[in-house]
Image (cartoon, rainbow, N blue to C red; front, side):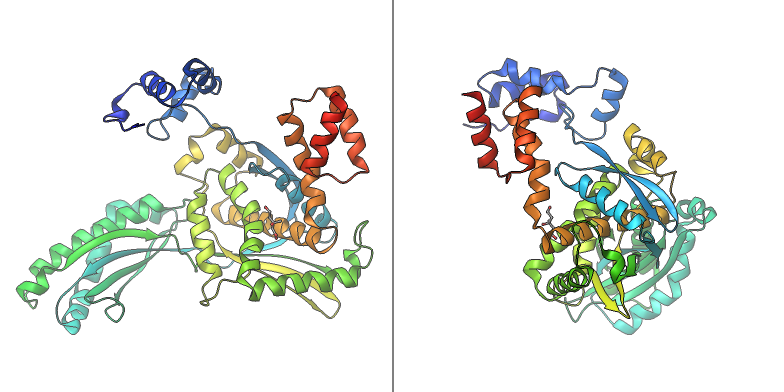
Length: 438
Ligand code: MEV
């Protein structure tokens, strides 16, 4: 089958849907019905969503849930989360409630610097390039005044621009390595616009620099782009309490619990196979809030995992210790987030999420996101080191199985009652449903 098509983007939405339905489905009418079932009845709202991307045919729903009772720096938050994994919101909520009676979460933004680079090739004398850079450095700032003036009014802008010599790693390769403060915006457009102007200034000034030879004047800009690696845009989240205060219904021996918990974290610190899954649990919380607040979760993911490998070995983002009878669990993660610009003023549910969070600044949002990640990590480690993960997971997953079998309300009652005291597995639930229906 050859499904190649020229000019797909030029087709109308209706034509695109008809083509997809005819090409890929034995029953195109049903396929079209499913696609259209997810359209919003409000045409303007649908148009808004259509225009977010190219070639939109429908909307893809993900649940948006709320994890309440997050006490962060003395203030309560109800945290909106967008995620498909059944146990995540429940786990976050459970951790939030647990820590709300043990002093809550402490969170601090340590710094919020973003980075962008102009990557260029220069074949010539290094000293001359350095002298040239020093001579024209102020021009990078003046040439970008139109772009930076609004950002400067908000207290942000270009912090510094450095010339970096990378020729030891790649022949003739240099960078303009620039740092930015973008306040409440994530700042990707701002940074990229500044960088593209830097690149123009660099090329134009090189052409006019009389000390350069003809070859040196022809320095070549390869690309100008922000970096999603933001090791100086860090937020720290922490919980702590006396070891005996960790006690709860399923934590009968808090001393043993704390020690096992610390061991579990230490394993993730030195064992990459475990660290990846450990950090994935953190990202369950992080991504869900990042998505709900209209931020770029791929950027966050890329930056966080690079940070987790900054020593050369992939390691746990979180850490734990027991000192003088105090259990402390914390992490520091890079989060470049925005609460203005991008989707934040466009997507009605993003606006709602930010309203639910009491219209946070970018720094506050960094704190909320980090805390949700830490809460998620706590919940996972708590389950893993006590009951095992499947108990909680399957309790939540049972709903997916019941939906898959289109069980009635009456059947659900019987099934849920039965599995209050029996081990839940996919097979055991399916078998029970089949027997029930016999
Ligand atoms: C599942 O989505 C996340 C966990 O695997 C995290 C962990 O193992 O720490 C439970």
